[in-house]
Image 1 (tube, helix red, strand yellow):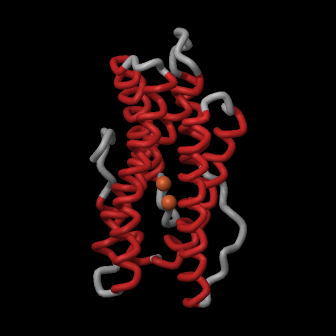
Image 2: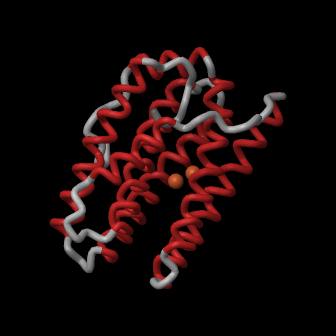
Length: 200
Ligand SMILES: [Fe+2]
Ligand SMILES: [Fe+2]
């Protein structure tokens, strides 16, 4: 799906079905992180107003998602709690740093790493629709988010293309490298999965 090289292990779906509360809590933290990461990119790369506007709008949308997941938690009497260590994001950051520094602007890689995360979210929300098929409110929410994450993937890829001065071959190459690394990360984390996460 989108740029992903490795589909989610079917065991992830079984784990999510057994621990929907854990999925909701992790999901809430992911939305907050998505918003704050978009804003951190704005803070670090304020020179392109196109990027500033696009990522401000994206952050606003992620914050709205966060707020709505918190409503689901609240209506089910589930606490949000502190975010657990995010091994997926940490390993993806390392993979991003490990790419050959061949003059590609760091911003291109950062935007593409964010695109890969959106692609994985998109895939997971599709899978979650099947997990909650009898819960209309949650299923409709995941349907909406599935479309949002696909759009966010394109936003990040488009911004990366702009940051790469229109070099589509470069963007495709770097995205493939990051997607392959992400696939290995997801496979590695699946082997030691002990809790339900939106990523990893
Ligand atoms: Fe979101
Ligand atoms: Fe997103």
